[in-house]
Length: 360
Ligand SMILES: O=C(O)CCC(=O)C(=O)O
Ligand SMILES: [Fe+2]
Image (cartoon, rainbow, N blue to C red; front, side, top):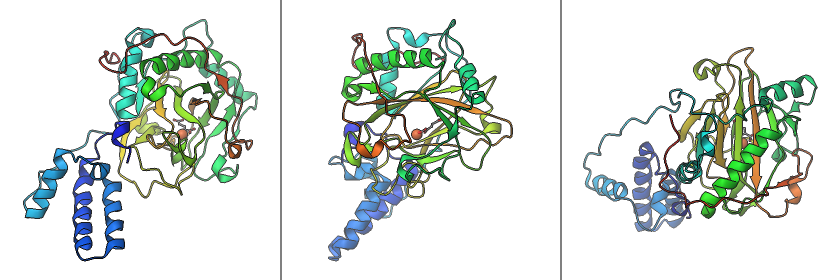
């Protein structure tokens, strides 16, 4: 299993005991000669705690296994941090252009699979992206979102309306490109494959029972898998007028732990039931916030429903692609397929360690 290679975060504390109990039961079945049943339980153990499949177990696993074998009490679990972080004051404008910022952001991306960057709004005289979004809405540029995997049908797992390549978002896309080029230079180990970008997709969610159910943007792990689509990194930029009251409005981007690649799960849901309880963060769609995450199984995510009538959740999504040919099944009229090359020199940068954090 390549989990350690990708720097996956430790499995959640509450999953460890069930994982090891499953592991012990699998061992017992092995001893009893029931190999098929044992394999099933080993697999269940690995899906709960990926570390158990690694060659070298972490300390907690050995200690917990010994305690379970001996019937000794297990240490109490620490309570997990809240999913929704407290709002933070806006950072200085354009702070992310500072020399040290890419290394810091890339380090977070490498260790957490996602990174949140505030204060990303393009500076004047660029028109505010929210004005462009509203203009596209009034011009009738939107239609109900459809899913590639559902044969292009509108889907019960997704309630947003989208518009591809609306006018007025060029400065935002150019700023994101500049940032991604610098991140690529800061962390070539993970980001060197990025070569192109999809045109901006604008989305609008209003109050509904569902936002966009748990999914990954690329059914792939490190370029391997039948449903690979070439997306490496997803960038989502949020816009709203005034504060976003996440408790009252909902609409957060919920990010989950990396998951094992699954064959059945397609864009727009599937894995949620298997892996419930592994959310790591609820990211509020605060105005000017940019979230970057790996498009593949390293970062399953979901848009939580907007709960309040009259509230609009606006986002621009940019997908950064590798240079592989676009798969045939992808060219289905659901997505805009005109990729733009990510041109320009990457300024040289240190590998992704040791830079200051985003100011807060
Ligand atoms: O709007 C967001 O926060 C994420 C949207 C998303 O996951 C997608 O369009 O694939
Ligand atoms: Fe997504």
